[in-house]
Length: 211
Image (tube, rainbow, N blue to C red; front, side, top):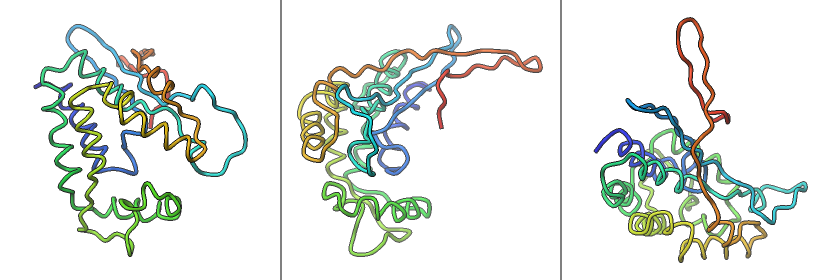
């Protein structure tokens, strides 16, 4: 493999072991430099086509169309050497067999408890009989199934098919705006780059802020 394979495999692994920070329901941006080019991938979230701006409480209405999966696979297709199945195998195993929670995991998951307490879809994973403790094992079987579908079918494994249907149905049932068409129409793109010089150094960045 190469550095692009490492980045993609790591991105999917982080979606398992950092569920509060790096999940596949979020966004991604990548900046890369090779011997022949400087480029980037813009996999930011997008606003659903039926979105209506208003004052909302925390919940489904705030969810945008996720770009992580599309962006990572686009990065893999453009420069990667290994197969998608090879790159996602570690993350599937982490989700299926579980991983040991670190102090950072425990702090973030426990802080989020009040936000997800009434969401039956996430209760079974992120809320237990008591707060998480360091060293607990977090198993995410459904996420393993989704990652397996992505590994077998690439972009279509997330943005169409049964995964997309479940996402859109869940959105419909809970007042969210994302539809099946929104998912199917999502496209990550090559990033717009900005460049400049500072103290004899060439500085390159994505034009969108990323954190």
